[in-house]
Length: 237
Image 1 (tube, helix red, strand yellow):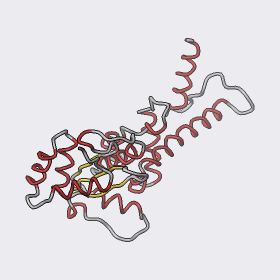
Image 2: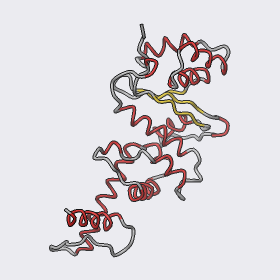
Image 3: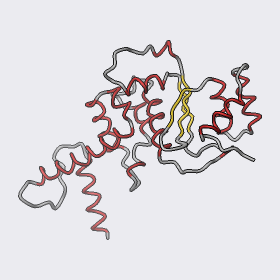
Image 4: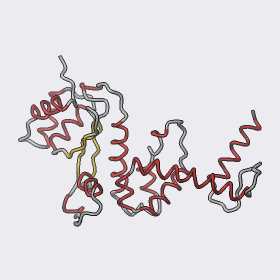
């Protein structure tokens, strides 16, 4: 048992170490241990890259292929998955981007990563309803940057045009999968306050009051009817 565990640790160290000259112990065959280790290493690191690219497609567009690959390799080495579920890999990307030297100057990237991880989680969320009858897949991602405009720009990377991040201001984005597809849309201040209050467990009347506090002319009943109609909220009796 100890020998098997020791070999596994040596294998992981050799494959994930950025140091030159590390080889997997005990390899033999027609190619050298160094070449065989390099093949293993490339396959594993590219697995990190592809897994993260599937989740963080907008981040990939925003920073480019080479930078993203460097981030993916570094993330996989620093925060290896502790789950056998490939879908669980990448949860800590927002914090990682905020501190990585290649991306820490791009202040909007962690929030974009939060948006994309929320979408990823929503897609595989349980098909049930939680606090206040809200769909279990629902997330509210809030940022001082225009996340939806940035995300939509990344869906058409060849389109001409730029975004003035300062002029557009912040965003509150609803993310939910009431049926087959994940839905994302920006919310008004009142609707964002309404969803925020419901998610925090406040009853509907207090959620309506919270909405009117930030947007006095809003219509919380319209929010309710829209949410029920979209399958985001279950009508409670």
